[in-house]
Length: 358
Length: 261
Ligand code: HEM
Image (cartoon, rainbow over all chains, first blue to last red):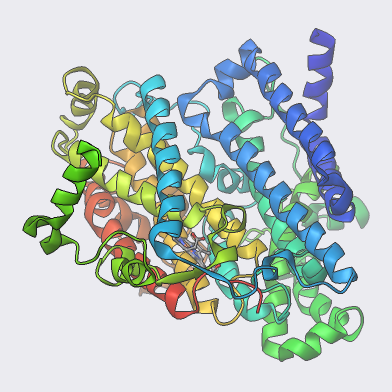
């Protein structure tokens, strides 16, 4: 048992954990028709439940994360997100198979058939309402809302964690300075969500479940939601301890754990390690490699793709909307890129200019 | 005819009943339509809805659940306001006595867990809307109204988190609002802040930047508590209610719940 927990702790190393998550994610998209078959999905669900029970029996995990009343919604979130991911991909799989046979989506089966709001729809709503009320009452009756000692400006808790639904934002702070992680990137999440209807020119898949007809849009959205949002919440909730250091989920939190901080800037790599000379004095020379790299990333990739792989999309969207789409995606990709660079080569900043660190 | 049935019929025939409900039981098409048309709440719905849109496996009922949770949070929130003072010396004790001395001592629990549930249900609602492609024309604008509602829901959670005035509250909000310090140009530690100055005098300082405006001070203190209280109980719900009205109206005007053409 202990050996197994050690093994799981080792798997939870951030780099390994992200790799596994992305691999599972890609497998899900590739084999969505097989994975969502009821028997297989049921087995996955049972496995998740078993993992929850297993986790709930571990002293450290319960003490550090799972047992905190405010974290109770996390298993609920994982369960519902998994369930609804299954449901929508299952329905997509069925519709996609129907489409291959030349049939309309299942939702069209009933055609323009309609039911009366009163009593049919109102009845469903009422049942929903009763179920939610019952759940909420039991939850409120069984679990006390947390209350810690009175507010004190002098006693800083360690770690000071945001509520679970903001943990992905807090996790971004590890890889970017606050002006990016706390302001620009969250702002871009909102802007990006709002832009979706205007940068997805695909008229198909409106009003029914499908994956085959909307592969690009759904893959991007699911990557953002499942990997960059949900998985990062798991990082923040279960794998971060005192001083925001990484701990395995079954590991005891040691507030004196010392992690050597040897993060290195790109400029130091470039000038000192590779060219073997001291850092230039003037910032615009020192940071030139990083500036060029980041500028190239944003300026070169969109046109490159517009003339090759994404030619069709470019023509469909036009110059402005195509560039908005690409830049939003590039900003989104910046996060995993920076995470990997941090783990692989201890990269601190690509660009390090006083207040403008990237 | 049983007594029960008879009494029921008598009640339906009474002037009081008929003054409230202007239609008979939903046994005829006319009555079913009348029920919706004459009731301001039911009138949020069209008289008839596409069958596929009513299926729970299509909508997951998540928009409805979100709305219901919002209503439940409003009711429990009003009850909580009867017992709570947004002042540094009273807030924490009010929360303690909510548990110990108040009848129906689970109001705070209902409110807190309801809030967590609402955050989750908004996400799932958005997830459903995305997966059914319901943001596509003609529903682009309503998707945008939805995104703002999502933002408001998160802001409601964030401002509410401070009100118990315990360690959890003040530090979570401190961590969160510290971001604002780094806001480009208008946060005093943010990039570009040094550009805004007259002569040698910087315009964006710890005492004048966006974080100061948010906290009503340089750190999370009593003035912040009042500010968050007003935002949480009045300002944000006010905006949310208006946007929900727009949201529901647009669901209808955009052709009801989406479905294949
Ligand atoms: C306080 C938050 C919200 C409430 C109370 C709410 C409520 C509702 C309700 C009751 C419906 C009817 C259909 C259904 O239940 O699925 C609906 C539809 C819709 N919602 Fe929301 N919503 C909220 C947030 C959002 C968000 C965050 C988005 C997207 C970003 C969104 C986008 C839409 C769209 C596009 C429709 C039309 C869907 C269709 O026709 O299939 N809403 N909303």
